[in-house]
Length: 451
Ligand code: BGC
Image (cartoon, rainbow, N blue to C red; front, side, top):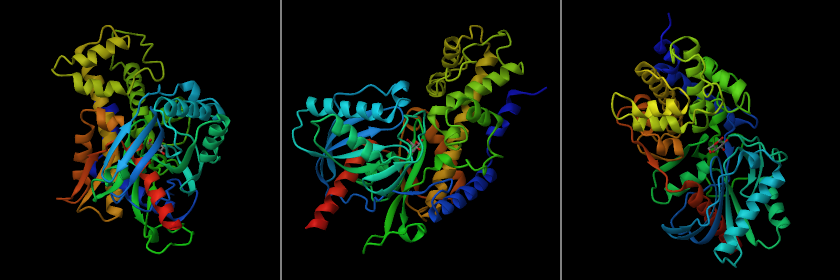
């Protein structure tokens, strides 16, 4: 007879397997640097410079990503900054995420208008737009959305220029005067934000609703870069879009039957973002749910309950429960697991049930942390920064899960040379301040070019 441990066994990735995964990731990253259309897209961001601390002025930042939608007013003065983020806006509803691009961008323009009015802004301010999806950029303010991720599917946006869609919506709503100067991925914003204080920050990482990483690469290494090289410009931030790792089959031996089930039967983007689906907050709860369903059908869980309707309903087991369980189970009676199981309609959970569900949560989040560590260690080795590098990290999974950071550190220690100097640093509002910084650097460079 099988056991809970046997079902969870494929989630345990040994050091050797993780090293093998790193090799494949590196080779896919090299492919992405060499050509358009590779699985890991390795998108040039047109951000060539980290901030140098001289950035000044007032900027608006729009932040459209996974769970949050925000507008911010940011004043930069060298290394210090202040920010206003009132009024706050509701997270986007599933309806808005799934409407048309016009409705989505009209909603964004409306929020921007409310923000500008509420803060009495009368001057035309530069705006940085953090748009946390894969965008093929051809300039700092030009880029087409390749594909929606993370539950978005607003029709008419894919393959279109995002800045044009935003500008068109601003035009429809006459009266908002802003100057859109930069389109920024959240990973780049995160890296920029930390780089302002920390010269060793070369990598930006998001572990939230979705996952992705960016880093500073030598332009020489970006084989597909065909634009004229400007003197003195030697680096570029590359948005890896590592969430798509495995979409071409390279991780088929790593993905479990549960990953495949989630990808094919639950997610709205079948076959896409398969690495993301093993790591990010949007999916971890779902993984736990489908594993528990299997354990139930094997007679290993909730033996006293034939029907577990909530467990049979997609998205009912929230990813937040993984954090709640590992935070709240303060003693052997596992009170947090018990409370969540009761919310999930399992009235008669036994001690064994609680222990098993907790083990499932640990297995899923530990694998996620180890895969994220495999990703980060591949990048820092690629840019030869194992001796000293800080990785700016943002996102609810990293910040709210009580053990994710420690598990990731353990993963990095396992995968990098002894005594490595790679440090994870939580970001200070990457998407907001980062967008303002990219906007500021853009304004500085425009001013220098026209001087
Ligand atoms: C998107 C990335 C983004 C990441 C984190 C992914 O789904 O494709 O562009 O950086 O989520 O928000």
